[in-house]
Length: 362
Image (cartoon, rainbow, N blue to C red):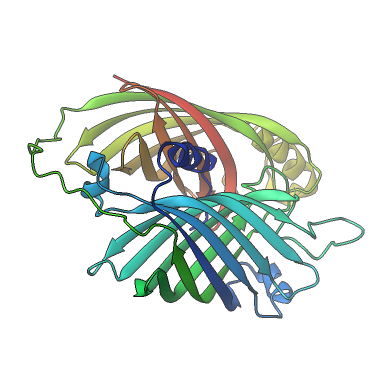
């Protein structure tokens, strides 16, 4: 729950343009606690975060194959406001895209949302040096929620209540970037604007096998980031991956691959570290390159899929980061072979890079 996917936001708005016959509005109030994950975060979380969440939802009607495959999910756009009740942290405003998935006769709702956030009080060396969480005004926002949902409690009015986990991080585009996580209880209502909405069950479709032979994938990801030293400068990075994937069924594919990391900010970090910490005996000429081996899973929805990977550095001469990394993100298949993606690469709770990628599947 620490990751961002702008492409999901854009694709959701494209979907709105195609079908606006089943809109509903959800409104929730939020209150909870922050989850500090580093020692320098505890002095920032001296209050209970609170706020509200507004979601404009488009309910799927079964007119497309993926609607029924995923039990008629919702998709749409959201606006989130959070006041951390902490002077250094200030308030955050976020907008983005969301999906609601349903279980237990559609009374259990899983909410996944991703977008862009703006903070009122980012880190400033003079004015706000305590805020190590937000190094920039703009950052990514990720939310995962689980709630009881009754959409037709009284006529067009429904009710929901549950828990929502939120995360904010700029992916170390600019330091500092500890990010922050919260868990909040949410209670709200929804209003359905449609009176004659019906879901279409396609009884004429023929079941097909989605199993495929092994495919080969080549991906180049890039962007800019800064090493952990504040004001050390932003540099480009290039992450090149090669992996095989095996589609198992309608929803899942497994991945196995290797990748080369050419992260220029690490090269600068090595130079700084060799001078600042001479007792560590780190040579300024230490190789900054890394080679990783990873396994992954891809959840296929339609042309959009969600991707998660866990890797291990088989080659890592400069060992300031732990040897295990992970990546989550979204892919959009432009064609059956060409795809774009937006991912975030982290070392557990510490983000390293927001990656924009382009790939080809053979």
